[in-house]
Length: 127
Image (tube, rainbow, N blue to C red; front, side, top):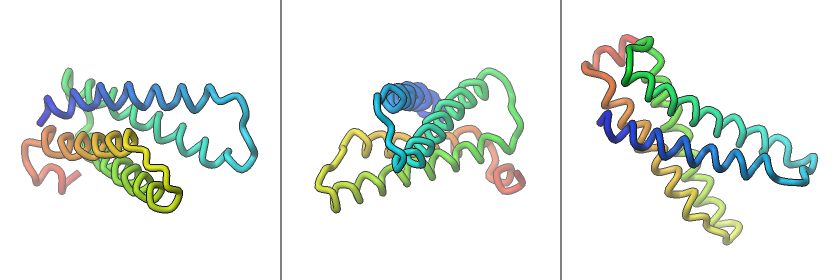
């Protein structure tokens, strides 16, 4: 599970970085898009930071409560991305399959991180 989590951390961090670059390279920003822009920047930066934390956790020990919270955040980000993608496909008739794959990848990375970096299920409950 650690290997899957590490691989997906690399892939998801690269994709989040590309999405951030595309978001920030937009030439015109309208006032009604500012909350959505801030949400995308925070989510993308969060995915990149959690990916870095996953790589650091393999090299040395980190605080025991951080990795389960990070994995849970990835599961939440992945689920939200999948729901947003399917909602967009149903109501706007513009399905973005690449975002569905990205949301699924975030969900799998979060689950692999939750299951792979804990040796005992009691340590997750105690954290």
